[in-house]
Length: 377
Image 1: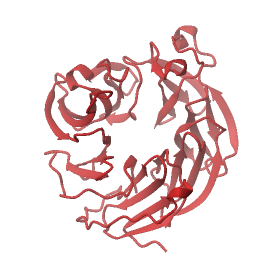
Image 2: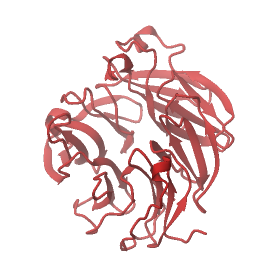
Image 3: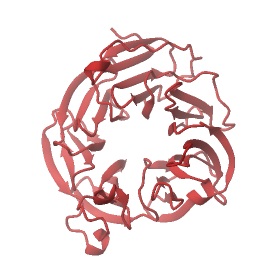
């Protein structure tokens, strides 16, 4: 039986890792109650996986054993008691359950070797799943897994919209963002025949969820979009990493009409490859950048940058290793959560979004290194 507070869902995928996993509780001061009172986090050491639920208001912790894949991300839709785990490469399925009692209620395949990336829940009977190794967006019933249809991303598009130096025929669709009746889908357009190098263009596909038709394909300013689409006033930003190891990417801003207003900053100014980013206010943004990625001592830094000229204002945190993974903004509480995959000290750092000072001396402990975070009710 689950108590209120921290609750942890534990899975062991390899038999050699089927022993008990312990997470030493750290008594973090409770945060004030808000609309979104939980963090759900997938964690992994790439052999075993944990889905960790953190109650930000309570302070107790209890582990359960429920299987998820070691390569997974999570969604917890607003207004819904359910969680959805996207079990990626090698598992190729969606797992869903009830967040209120920590029970898995179902699991369904999305196609062998299709490598699902994200799920967008439209209503209890309809959802879309992006699949990295398919050119077709999958529409399913998110509870039963029954396939409603497959939607070819490039069907009906003009040749100028889809022409690319990417020869494998797949758009490499990844993150999605639902805006009213529009579903925005990031297309990385990588060349799998050359080590998944970015092609000459990456794109944003716009799906009308009423008609299931792709209405528009927008070419991004840069290539290889790696971050989720993060809200920025009435629009959103996306981090584009380009070729890893080269300072050719940037953070692109789109307004509410999907017009690109260009880069807010670029990798040359940030000093490394973009890993993740978010906007704090009208003047400041945060980015995780990787430096010396293929060098002797790769590292990740959390940097504060100016929205006026894109310059770095300060280095908030230097991990000293390649470990900082994701940024998540809690706007209600003015908190930035930073996931740190340091194998010796993994966890989630909480920063005040105004001063960027740590709220607590300790991390929220997650057992295995954190991979993907979402806020939930």
